[in-house]
Every structure is written in structure tokens, then in C-alpha cells.
Length: 197
Image (cartoon, rainbow, N blue to C red; front, side):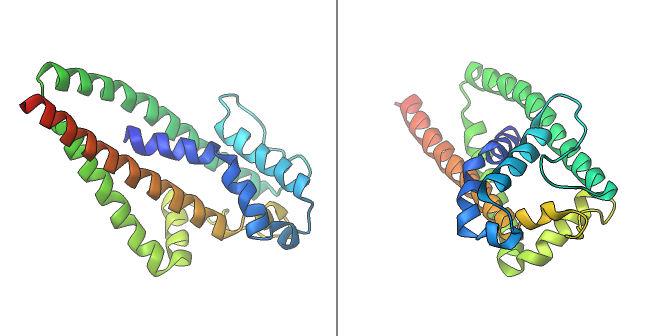
């Protein structure tokens, strides 16, 4: 859980992925906005969702409906809960590492790595089969309303957030999980071999 929440935090704050997608997905044409305005509003979204301060949602150059504001408040709550879970699991991680070192038991690396490898394999299947349906199910699970279905005439921010960008973010999360899983397995084998010699 610590690794997963850390990767989610990293991906959310890795604005360069979105900046790449601005040109790759031709977002200025989709949104009829300048690249500078797109960046300004996207940066605000990320800063709003990750800030520890209690802020009112007001995009720099775009209008938002009452439902749109509620949706982004709910998204912010989710990000704040991810941060809290990350901090809590860090405590358990430190305790677990201490106990493992004390007992000379490295199996925590192996079992965590196996679990982490299984997660992306399980999650990637529905995404590859039908991303749009997976995207809808994901939102229906996280939100108890349909405020995430934006009307571009009322909440033009949706024009700078194409679904393909979220697909790329999801792929980045899964790839990072997979890489860390492999590093953990490699570390387990290396350390286990050293301790048995």
C-alpha cells in the first residue's frame, strides 16, 4: 500500500506527463485554448488537489458549474485520503522493516513483490479490453453521483482533460509498480544469497 500510494502521488505530481500530452493529444485544438492557458489551469488543478490548505475551487481562466466544483472537491478528498494512507502505511513499513531485519527474515520483499506484480496484471486486463468502460466503472465506484460527467458548455475544463491522458497516467502507474516489483525480487534474491553464504 505504501508503494502504490507513493506511485500515485508521484504520478499526480509529475506534470511533465501532462505537458507531453498537450502536444501529443493536440489539446490546444480540442479545447480551443493556448498552451499557456492549458498549463495554467492544469497546474492549478494539481496544486488544488495536492495542497494541504483548505481552498475554494476557482480555475484561473475557466468557469465552473456548481456540480463541477463539487466533483473537484470530491477528487481533492480522494487525493488527501491517498496522502493520509501513504503516511500511515509508512509507519507500518518502518515497523515491518525493523522486525524483518531483527529476525533476519527477507520474505517481506518477496511477498510484497509478488503482490505488486499481480496487481498491475489484474488491473491492466479490463483496461486493455475496454478502457472507456473501465473508466466509467472506476468513476462509478469512487463517486456517488454523476457530476464527473461534464457538460463542456458549463465546465470547459473537461476539454483539457481527454480520457487518453488518464489512460497514459494509468499506464505510468502500472509500469512503475511493475519496475519496483522487479527491483524488490532482485533485491530479495541478492540479499538472500548473501545471507546464506
